[in-house]
Amino acid sequence: MTMPAGGFVAISVTPLDETGAVDYADLARLMQFYLDCGADGVALLGVMGEANRMTDTDARIVVEHAVKAIDGRVPIIVGVSDPSLQRVQSLGEFSRSLGCAGVLLQPLAGLQGDRSVAGYFRAAAEALGPDIPICVQDFPKANNVHLSLDAWGMILEACPTVVMLKLEDEPGLGKLSAIRAAESAGRRTVTIFTGNNGIHLMQELDRGSDGAMTGFAFPDVLVRVIHLFRSGQRQEAEDLFDQYLPVNRHELRTGIAVRKEILRRRGAIRTAAARYPAQPLSETDHAELDGLLARLETAAGAPITELRSG
Image 1: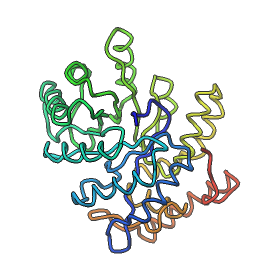
Image 2: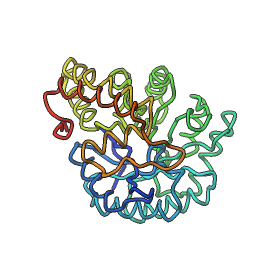
Image 3: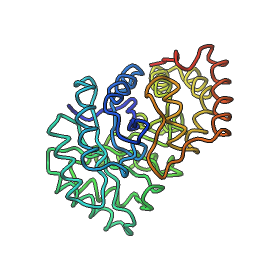
Image 4: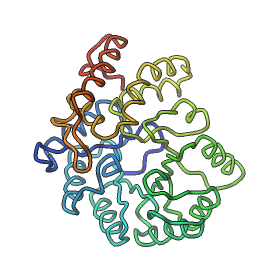
């Protein structure tokens, strides 16, 4: 299975039961939900997959159960970010042995300077070996590391297995344009997916993004937006995107608990449980979400359980 070349890759949440344990049976339901939404790939154990709250055993069984559920229908990318290169290597090799397409890797938190950032990815690529493709996750909010254009160039030169960038810097539109301009001038070309709930998806597509890799609880909508854009129906893409923008913005700013609650209401998972330090939604939180989703259902002309645009 090769890495996806474009479209939409769903960043999966990790379903939990009422006790906070991973709900492996529910994971199969969630994978089918992403497939039904038209996803071109699924990424496991990312930031919104609560990867840093999983045990090593949890992580491996999540990968095993997801691979079984997906059954080769779309590529799977596994988040392996960890302070320990040994853990990065171990989970990467395990995932690849099960047929996963590659890994998603953030820089080590706190790295300073271009050479240090590039040096980390060179060390990680060597540890993972030549047969494991890497998607670099540029997400300074999570690790306080700045990936400059110079550092990115060093990574591409030193790491042939780096074939993809998940660009989540803010602001990131200028960086996206600069990377594509450098490629036009001869730098090695990679697939670029953007994240952050796809909140700037239309502009990112205009500037050369190959698609979105994110966990917005309406993945089917982003799939449809991308399809419309690619087929030249720009106005229809904008209109659909704008219809979901209030919910998207709210989910982006409020985090994993709201995302899981929307997925629960859509029937993708059984509970909205998330591990500490995530907090359950309050009555006010639920009331706000009720209002946003009611407006969305009125505009869409259907309940959110029936919406499928993929």
